[in-house]
Image (cartoon, rainbow, N blue to C red; front, top):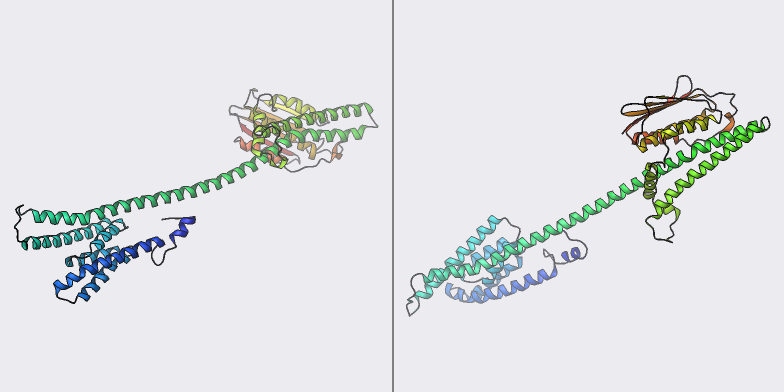
Length: 439
């Protein structure tokens, strides 16, 4: 039996083998009553047996006091009651002993054997006493020979059956309650374990969503900002030599900045709407408390809505923006172009975009080849650049690199079940390849 809290404290408050103080008080009271009963019944027994009355009273006190150990040794108590049954004493000892025996955790065969012995002993004693009383009467009974056996059987069953059945009921009920408590404790532990696992999963989900948000922000802003830096470097190089080209480059820088700000506002607007959907109007929540899961879910919904995210049809515009910086980009498409799932097209676009951004950062002015292949069940893309040119006018742009571009591309492609490979070429350039399932 498992107990917790106050029940546990109460269960350990009794002396010796008693679990509670009230159980000890009850057993002491029953033992005193049983000792008093047996001592009273021991007096006539001593007279009939021809022994001193004091010895009979002492014997009754000792036998009746056996009830004190009924919880610890119920078998011994029942055996004592069977042993003193011929002395016609120990009715309370017999009744309480059988009840305790039936309510205990002992095997049923032992309970049945001891109950049968007690029934047989009580039956024999009752039968003998009834015959003695009938034979010693001056008036002969006219009810027949069945009267004595009937009275004996009824009396023995009346002494044995009720406490035995009550004990079996109480024992079964106690075991049921213990089973329910254990089940409740087990369910509580399982709920606690589930709560811990849910917290771990939530923490993992928050970490994953933070990574997704960072990747989305990187893809949205980094490319255009990189182009702005490249154009600014070119503007610095030609400002005095070719004012007209400097003006065009300045206009391109302005356009790129406005586009970057527009995409950034859209992204922040999606995050704000995703966070504010579950708050009351006017509620003030610090930025650190923004729900990462809600924000990333909003980002994902925005990315999956038609027209919201980039698609493969915008590759020409993307390459044109890189070409405007002086980068030579060769685009080749194999297979028949068709529509893909929004997340597939967005991932393919982002791979090409990030690969071109890396070319601007690390191989400014190098000729770049972009290959796109539409296959039966997949779409493949490859971006490869030649070694950077040392005489490039934009080589002094010195674009910073956070080292997360390739990681973000791989995460996107692998998340859709594709394959991503990147690394330097034998000629000194760099190659990025990806294959994404079409569905």
